[in-house]
Image 1 (cartoon, one colour):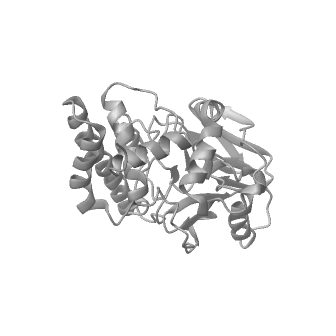
Image 2 (cartoon, one colour):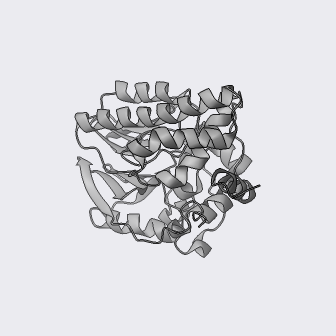
Image 3 (spheres, one colour):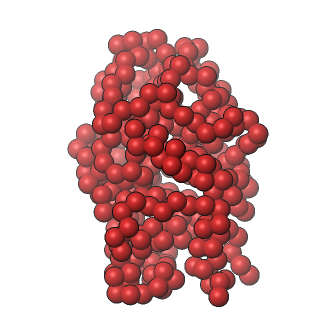
Length: 319
């Protein structure tokens, strides 16, 4: 029997957790679904990552309104993927902030990514008709931007290519807490279809150098101690290394993509099969690792057609 495509068959609702990880700093998590961060300052609220639709964003808004009535001033996008950005209009924020590269990637491949992700993970796109169109940042920056919510300072930083070419993190100095986006995951598979495998470990080093007291990853539970933060960084690094090194060795030796995929399964299934979205991510990850090993620096754009063709080939369903 053919394996169902990506997460198309994942229809089970996830348990939402909204917890304080520092003073007026919150993590919205849902058992491996995309996380959102909430930073409350003296005069307003900053939200990190907007969920996939305005209707889905309402879950985050409801949690915020349970702890504060301050206005939502900023929505920060950690990167360009549809499940992170298309809900932004629901927050009615004053500004939508992202890196220059994130905005460029929306311009280059945002529509294709929207259609691709909707086909891969339909459950996340609650009431898709509420999406008004592509989300366009109103403010962008190259390497670093500092915001003030009254006296509370938030540093937005590009620390290097990782999950995509334009990922940023948010750092709250008064509490030594970081929101990493998908640059760090915790016991959830890293999606690497748009990744830069060979750059990502250095980006993890830079994140670790801040020595966060707590960290909200892109997926997985909030990490509420320095030890847990370092564990998550270590696990993320190992996941990437296992997939890339195995794939690269096969690709450079002339093996097919399917042969590389089968080899990665042998290495990774025993270690990571229980990670959230592992089965979903693995074919996309191997395809990107294979390309990068052969010198393709800019990830190829994923379309609905490319998604399905690649999936079928790696599951042995194509001629």
